[in-house]
Length: 140
Image (cartoon, rainbow, N blue to C red; front, side, top):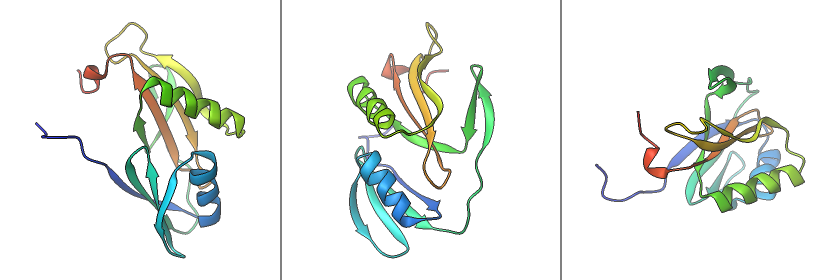
């Protein structure tokens, strides 16, 4: 369907740019690109995310997925296992509180995956995962 995988772009709200810069740069390890006093471009595993300064943000609602309360909306990246493990270790070391601790879900089923959920300082929910079989990413 697609000729090649291209970087994804996502712009999302934050209520404090310095906290966002510390979290995405210092905790997550994202390289900062262009920025202003209203937004910050960041490299998230090769994808462009942009934080935009916005008034107070409410926490996301949740939906049950495989017995886990998953925050909606959320965003993240499907990683390889070594990058996922390194990120989980970095987040633990930096004291990030997980919504869903790093774990495997759908064990033995189509779509088996290691996953973790956490929030940034502006309450945006993030999920990073690894599929046991990447070809099952869009399987039904």
